[in-house]
Amino acid sequence: MYIKKFLTIFLLFFSFNTYAAEYVVKMLNIGESGPMVFEPDYLKISKGDTVIFEMTDPNHNAILVAGPKGGTNIDTEYAPKTSYTFDVEGLYFYQCTPHTLMGMAGFIEVGNNANKAEVIEAVNKFEEGVVVPNAKGRMQKLIEAN
Figure 1 (cartoon, one colour):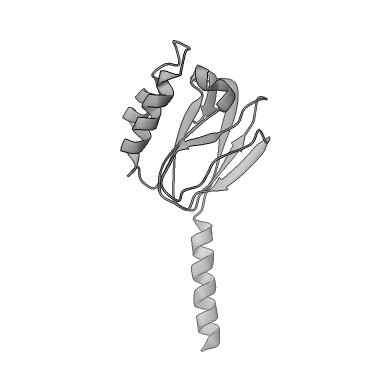
Figure 2 (figure 1 turned 135 degrees about the horizontal axis):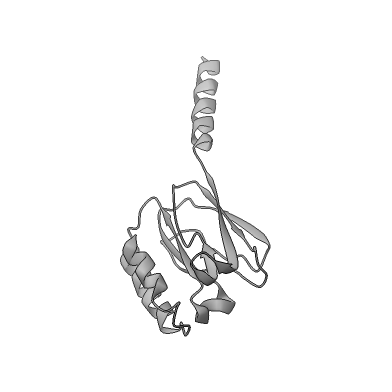
Protein backbone atom coordinates (compact mmCIF):
# COMPACT_ATOMS: atom_id res chain seq x y z
CA MET A 1 0.00 0.00 0.00
CA TYR A 2 2.74 2.46 0.98
CA ILE A 3 4.77 1.57 -2.09
CA LYS A 4 1.85 2.41 -4.41
CA LYS A 5 1.37 5.80 -2.73
CA PHE A 6 5.10 6.52 -2.89
CA LEU A 7 5.30 5.55 -6.57
CA THR A 8 2.23 7.64 -7.41
CA ILE A 9 3.63 10.72 -5.69
CA PHE A 10 7.06 10.14 -7.22
CA LEU A 11 5.63 9.79 -10.73
CA LEU A 12 3.47 12.88 -10.35
CA PHE A 13 6.43 14.93 -9.13
CA PHE A 14 8.66 13.59 -11.89
CA SER A 15 6.09 14.27 -14.61
CA PHE A 16 5.67 17.92 -13.54
CA ASN A 17 9.41 18.55 -13.62
CA THR A 18 9.81 16.89 -17.00
CA TYR A 19 7.68 19.47 -18.75
CA ALA A 20 9.44 22.55 -17.40
CA ALA A 21 11.55 24.23 -20.07
CA GLU A 22 14.52 26.56 -19.94
CA TYR A 23 14.95 29.64 -22.14
CA VAL A 24 17.77 32.16 -22.63
CA VAL A 25 17.24 35.91 -23.09
CA LYS A 26 20.40 37.62 -24.31
CA MET A 27 21.23 41.24 -23.44
CA LEU A 28 22.89 42.66 -26.55
CA ASN A 29 24.46 45.88 -27.79
CA ILE A 30 23.44 44.92 -31.34
CA GLY A 31 20.86 42.32 -32.22
CA GLU A 32 18.62 41.32 -35.12
CA SER A 33 16.14 44.09 -34.34
CA GLY A 34 18.76 46.83 -33.83
CA PRO A 35 20.93 48.31 -31.09
CA MET A 36 20.42 47.74 -27.34
CA VAL A 37 17.98 44.84 -27.36
CA PHE A 38 16.95 41.73 -25.52
CA GLU A 39 16.74 38.63 -27.72
CA PRO A 40 14.12 37.39 -27.83
CA ASP A 41 12.28 40.57 -26.89
CA TYR A 42 8.92 38.79 -26.50
CA LEU A 43 9.02 35.33 -25.00
CA LYS A 44 6.00 33.06 -24.41
CA ILE A 45 6.56 30.39 -21.77
CA SER A 46 4.56 28.09 -19.52
CA LYS A 47 4.13 28.31 -15.77
CA GLY A 48 7.11 26.62 -14.11
CA ASP A 49 9.54 27.37 -16.95
CA THR A 50 12.90 29.03 -16.29
CA VAL A 51 14.37 32.05 -18.08
CA ILE A 52 18.10 32.74 -17.98
CA PHE A 53 19.09 36.35 -18.60
CA GLU A 54 22.56 36.30 -20.17
CA MET A 55 24.65 39.47 -20.35
CA THR A 56 26.20 38.68 -23.74
CA ASP A 57 27.55 42.23 -23.99
CA PRO A 58 28.69 44.19 -20.89
CA ASN A 59 26.82 46.81 -18.84
CA HIS A 60 23.26 45.50 -19.11
CA ASN A 61 20.65 44.49 -16.58
CA ALA A 62 17.01 43.49 -16.54
CA ILE A 63 14.62 45.11 -14.06
CA LEU A 64 10.89 44.40 -13.80
CA VAL A 65 8.74 47.39 -14.78
CA ALA A 66 5.32 45.73 -14.58
CA GLY A 67 4.01 42.24 -13.99
CA PRO A 68 1.27 40.19 -12.36
CA LYS A 69 0.61 40.53 -8.64
CA GLY A 70 2.78 38.11 -6.70
CA GLY A 71 4.88 37.37 -9.78
CA THR A 72 8.61 36.98 -10.17
CA ASN A 73 10.59 40.13 -9.38
CA ILE A 74 13.21 40.40 -12.12
CA ASP A 75 16.43 42.16 -11.10
CA THR A 76 19.61 40.74 -12.64
CA GLU A 77 21.89 43.26 -10.84
CA TYR A 78 24.36 43.28 -13.78
CA ALA A 79 25.24 39.62 -13.19
CA PRO A 80 26.63 37.71 -16.19
CA LYS A 81 23.81 35.14 -15.88
CA THR A 82 20.69 35.19 -13.74
CA SER A 83 17.87 32.66 -13.85
CA TYR A 84 14.26 32.92 -12.75
CA THR A 85 11.53 30.31 -12.59
CA PHE A 86 8.12 31.79 -13.33
CA ASP A 87 5.35 30.33 -11.17
CA VAL A 88 2.76 33.11 -11.57
CA GLU A 89 0.96 33.47 -14.89
CA GLY A 90 0.73 36.84 -16.58
CA LEU A 91 2.64 39.33 -18.68
CA TYR A 92 5.99 40.67 -17.43
CA PHE A 93 7.56 43.85 -18.84
CA TYR A 94 11.20 44.54 -18.05
CA GLN A 95 13.87 47.06 -19.07
CA CYS A 96 17.61 47.61 -19.06
CA THR A 97 18.11 50.55 -16.68
CA PRO A 98 21.14 52.19 -18.35
CA HIS A 99 19.57 51.86 -21.81
CA THR A 100 15.93 52.86 -21.28
CA LEU A 101 16.48 56.01 -23.33
CA MET A 102 17.40 53.69 -26.19
CA GLY A 103 14.26 51.60 -25.72
CA MET A 104 15.91 48.45 -24.38
CA ALA A 105 13.05 46.41 -22.94
CA GLY A 106 11.24 43.13 -23.35
CA PHE A 107 8.31 40.93 -22.40
CA ILE A 108 7.77 37.48 -20.95
CA GLU A 109 4.26 36.05 -21.24
CA VAL A 110 3.71 33.21 -18.77
CA GLY A 111 0.66 31.16 -19.68
CA ASN A 112 -1.59 34.16 -20.37
CA ASN A 113 -1.60 37.92 -20.58
CA ALA A 114 -4.53 38.65 -18.26
CA ASN A 115 -2.75 41.77 -16.95
CA LYS A 116 -2.06 43.15 -20.45
CA ALA A 117 -4.01 46.39 -19.88
CA GLU A 118 -1.86 47.21 -16.85
CA VAL A 119 1.33 46.41 -18.77
CA ILE A 120 0.22 48.58 -21.71
CA GLU A 121 0.03 51.54 -19.30
CA ALA A 122 3.61 50.84 -18.18
CA VAL A 123 4.73 50.52 -21.82
CA ASN A 124 3.15 53.88 -22.71
CA LYS A 125 4.97 55.54 -19.82
CA PHE A 126 8.22 53.79 -20.81
CA GLU A 127 7.89 54.96 -24.43
CA GLU A 128 7.64 58.60 -23.28
CA GLY A 129 11.27 58.37 -22.13
CA VAL A 130 12.68 56.73 -25.27
CA VAL A 131 14.67 59.28 -27.26
CA VAL A 132 16.19 57.18 -30.07
CA PRO A 133 13.87 57.60 -33.08
CA ASN A 134 14.30 54.04 -34.43
CA ALA A 135 13.50 52.58 -30.98
CA LYS A 136 10.56 54.83 -30.12
CA GLY A 137 7.29 52.89 -30.34
CA ARG A 138 8.98 49.50 -30.71
CA MET A 139 7.60 48.15 -27.41
CA GLN A 140 4.10 49.40 -28.24
CA LYS A 141 4.18 47.61 -31.59
CA LEU A 142 5.53 44.46 -29.95
CA ILE A 143 2.80 44.27 -27.31
CA GLU A 144 0.08 45.02 -29.88
CA ALA A 145 1.33 42.19 -32.08
CA ASN A 146 1.09 39.66 -29.26
